[in-house]
Amino acid sequence: MGGGADDGYDAAAALAAFQASRAGVRGLVESGVASVPPLFLMPIDSCQPPVEQTTFAIPTVDLALPHSATMPLVRAAARSCGFFLVTNHGVDAAVGSAVSAVRAFHEQPLATRSAFYSPTPVGSVTYSTIPIHPAAGTNINEIAILPWRDTLQARFGPPPAPELGKLPASCRDALEEYQKVMAGFGKEVAGLLSEALGVGAGRVESAMGVEGWMMACHYYPPCPEPSRVTGGIEHTDPSLFTVLAQDAVGGLQVRLRDGRWADVPPVPGALLVNIGDVLKVVSNDEYTSVEHRVAIKSSQDARVSIALFFNPAKRGDSDLLGPLPELVTTGSPQRYRAFTLTEFMKSRKDIGHGVSSIDRFRIAHE
Ligand SMILES: O=C(O)CCC(=O)C(=O)O
Ligand SMILES: [Fe+2]
Image 1 (cartoon, rainbow, N blue to C red):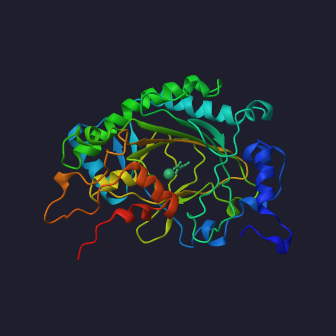
Image 2 (image 1 turned 30 degrees about the vertical axis):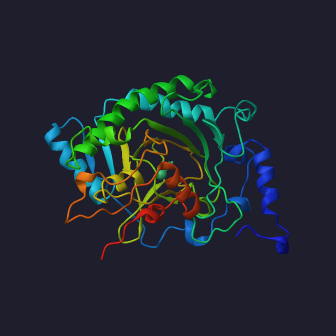
């Protein structure tokens, strides 16, 4: 992939030119590209839908049900497929405004939005086309490949809040409001997930803190050749858990246990929650962190999604992430050694963004 001197294509120069345009993928589409530039072409086996691609019904947790009913649903979903939809969450207005504000930001005229654009996401607020991690794909080598997506990313925590004044004015109020409302929603989800582990509702939060908020506001432009690109390569989330809000276009796919990929069609009004690698570790493998990716579905419609990662707030070099001691028993021995967030991030950098990045900390048992 990526070509070389032999075919006259210089991938590094193409990447530099794309980044220097400060226009993102949206800019390419606005300029009327009729085919996918090589920088975005995925190896065939990384983006083509497998033959038996299927649609999968994600379990739903209805928060209007009594607590005694929701808790077992959360427990079953977190253990079996690692994803669940949440309905009757009471935050529709904030979700609607945030998704609209993200679309408005990405669809501003080039001159306005390019002022925010940076080639790589460094800093607490960034707008970029984040290159695919070289180790993340099966046969992606050292030449960067880009996803068919532009991302406005903002770190909201842990406190003290980083410079949110850097958020673009066009979406600042809606995103700040969304974050505030979702902090409350996330506490409720953290409580349910903790209680469903049988360790008490406050345990996960008191052990880790959940205020390490990172918000990724994605924009997936329509693509002239959707099957040749990826919106996001297969990965697991590094978070404790992630909450995804999205419009009606769709594109998210999850990997089933048998290895096939399944479409997860958006459900109007529902939020999607998934378990990340850190909570899988904390739960001593009772919960599962499932690989997912994003396909581009449309040559007409741009898709917007907002992934809000609830990461551990406790992240110093003396804060250890590991299985909760009360979940370690004779029948269920400790599956991971404790590690710091710094070690974990290094592992993702070295090994890639799949679930295997926590295998470095796994304790082998006969
Ligand atoms: O846009 C989506 O549907 C998913 C995005 C995602 O998986 C992520 O940001 O980690
Ligand atoms: Fe993800």
